[in-house]
Amino acid sequence: MSVHLSRISDLTLNTSLATAQMVNSEKCLRIVVSLAITFCATCDHARCLEAMEQIKGLGYPLKTYQIWTVDKYRLGLERIPYGKHGYGVIGAPVLLLHGLYLSSAIFAINNSSLSFVLSDAGFDVWLFNARGAGLSRKLSIYKTPRSRPKMNRISWDFSFHEMGVYDMTAAVDFILKTTGYSKLDVVGYSLGTTIALACLTDKPEYNSKINKLVLMAPTSRLKSAGPPINIFKQFSKIVTVLLGGFDFFPYTEDPDTTYRLIRRLCSNKSVFRYCKTFIDLAHGIDLPITKDTVLEIASEFPQPMSSKLLKHMLQLLTSGRFCHYDYGPSGNLKRYHTITTPDYDLSKVTAPTYIVHSKNDTLVSPKDVKWLITQLPNVKDVNYIDKIPFGHLSFSLGTNMKEVVNSYIANKLLDNDL
Image (cartoon, rainbow, N blue to C red; front, side):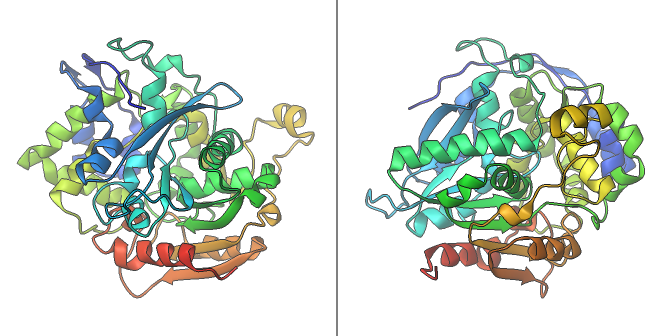
């Protein structure tokens, strides 16, 4: 199925103080503020779908699908049914769940990316886009082909909880029905792991539909998160107020043209180093990546994310717990029948679990991952990367990600150790 959407024009990009606090850099702030302009451009929407373009550009087969959740959100899935040399033979399905401010494109940056490594290993690779992200957003904000985008066609009243109990379950059911398999593998990265954990705790029956669960840089509680994330902890009240002014963040009326503009700006030699600095500050260490990779990131990052989701993540950060969304005492009593928010019961995640994390990840602290390991009842293997510099974005952007992480995941999924 092909996707035909419109050309889009007239950009208005707004930024806020919260971005400046996160990057903690006056130079980066100047670059962000410089994007708050009106810009007229056209964008062939097919070329804006970065994951799709990367897949086709690298010579892999591609299929796309639209599915609906039970609460009426439209999701877009990309699929690589077999590798370059798969000769049309479709293997076992694996679902990849992207991280915060990302889309499925993060798994298709280059030929070392996880989607291509798994595809070449013989898997039927399915790329997930949570509600409001990537292809799911692009399918939802255009009323008809060649219409202007309208972000409020989506209700942004959701967090990672809904992405887990509604989006992930819809994707799993659709994939199993389409492929005829009774189980599939799931690989989550960063927020993708949070989505998976929320799904499998509140919908524990889905554990029986998962062959193996891989949690890469797993985000559960954030008690020991380091810079720059802990800046939000210090200014949590201010950030909460700022987020209350937006349905989603970063706010832009036309995200796809925004990414085209950012990529064009980052292509400029004098601006490029600031774009790279922004990525490094978010990463925590100097990330050895090529100029092309920086521009690919600029084409998709940061995806607009629900303010409610961001407030939920902030609640995890300030409470040091892995818990449901806090609606306040009266709201909690109505929804959870308790004044305080309940923790996610991780003992219900019974699917065979494999964990990959790193010493230099400033967002997902080894201390928090060790805590998570003690809570999960069926951890089969832990791959702790501590001998080389490897931060949070290294899992998806590092020049050595194939050797360090992706080959390990492919081997574990291929291993008949269960």
